[in-house]
Image (cartoon, rainbow, N blue to C red; front, top):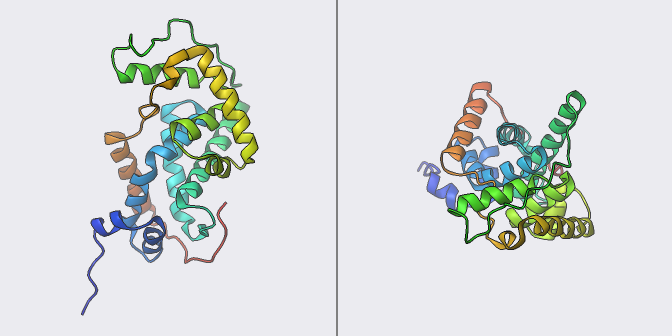
Length: 232
């Protein structure tokens, strides 16, 4: 009897490790499941570094293509989510450095004016999220990336440290300073749930998936067989 084909529902219920194994075995379609699970996280990580939505989306696409091409290097020492986030962070930092060589970047943008809307004055949640986003963009890069991963994406201290390749103590220090700077600008607004900050879902997620899957199919990328190489 022929084995039953793997369905989208099978992948959706499977762990990341099982889905990775299926992709390595040749099931390209299964890679979409991983993308949909972590698209927002990868985008947010890149966006925290480069402070530009379009560039962050481009970086996220490249990070996914790279992750697929080097999937055999996922050694399982960290979670797949951490592994792919680190790829995105490294790519974003490299892009930012190249851009800084061409056009100097002011990483200490002016602080927000005092008219930042408080929750009771905001028209809706999107207005509050936009105010928080503007304030986050004024933070120095180390504080910004830490705050986005910890307080926006909701990672714990250990995973944030793993994604950024820094000690946990550094994460705690940067987060404290980021929160202090943001509270000076935002006051009570900072206590609003950050779910909608730098959101990446719906049609944007669909577009990312379609673009990356097209690139993988067009260029015929093939992840090599697992060799047990540790994650970058």
